[in-house]
Length: 214
Image (cartoon, rainbow, N blue to C red; front, side):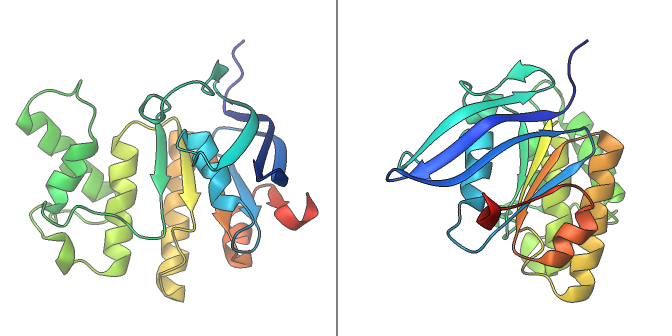
């Protein structure tokens, strides 16, 4: 039986010969694995390794598996990782709907079919009817929701979260956490969250790696 979820198999990341972090962890579908540590400790670098876009200044060993398949040698676009950053990184020259349509796999043909998927995705994150809006007219919380919808539309096999709640105020942060973690559970996506916020880790509810403990 194929093992489901994400497996970080004896992953170690170093910079100039100094090991920043080492982790051997299985993350089940729908589970959140949180990595905590101060700035510069290698949290985001771990996500880059998992996602396939590690800066060549760093060296890494170990392997990454998803649902039993070894991703380690694959290009970033072939790993199908959904990624959320501190900034939502919406395309300012595109409407909200066009931002979402950009992420829909090419296998979905036809403008109407793609627009329907985008509309449904917006409804799922509480933004029904917002497809024609300019991203600049959205609040911070709305932009975060659009970024999540876009990530989920890409058909990810896992979610990588790089402090995506850190720029939201306290009330919006709690709502955004709940939405992201609920969607991950519903879609059975393994999640790796990097953060320095204890409240993020508590809300995630899964195992925690504190890099200072490595």
